[in-house]
Image (cartoon, rainbow, N blue to C red; front, top):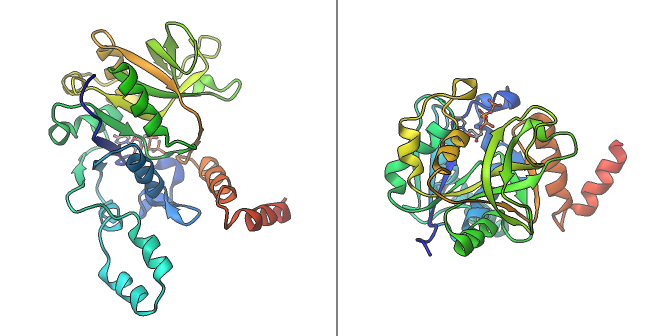
Length: 289
Ligand code: UTP
């Protein structure tokens, strides 16, 4: 069995075009779902999978992400003085241990593959996770923890997938499988946004990966692909020539917070899943309908 997965790369340097103008001054992944930034949920998921170091790939104007994960003595001091200890605990819940987070500037949003490549020196020569933070996973066992268990079982590279809604597979990155039995299957390929009717399966790549460090050498010399961007899928496709890839159909549901409707759906779903909010949220939604 290979080395343990200790580090996660979280690329957040995209422009968030689909959620502008909100994402103009607040990085997309700091937008709230209910009462916490999207990133808060993703970091919690990573911790549940045993991740010890978080590598954020950021762009200009995203300093608020570092500030969110830093202490704020003024706010914390006021909450303490006022005895609002439950809110204080909630504010501190997301704080890392000093040294657990790295922030790397991508400098230009050249694509997801390029963003991941920017993490090469901090990751070094060990397997690592990639988490696309706009994808929020609601799952009893954290989605990344399921991926890490699968990795511990079969090694190599793991791509987390989920059945696409009927008729929508052509909108996503879709995996091709050697055979489909149970939830963990060997991959034979993947295709970005296949033409309708040509999809090799109905399973879309949902934004959690365990990858081997050899991906960095591939990304280093990779040409630009679809949309003029350096695509992670192209890099994985090349790595698949020499290494095993398995697709894991995880148990849970993905909410894509990258566009307006997805963000709305995530807010509703996560509010309904909060015991202290569920009844009031259901009532409010009913009234609106
Ligand atoms: P997306 O394409 O979904 O995000 O990339 P985006 O570019 O922010 O969104 P739109 O299309 O403009 O609305 C998936 C993830 O990869 C990151 C994004 O921040 C997002 O979390 N990403 C993408 C980078 O970090 N760098 C890039 O060059 C591209």
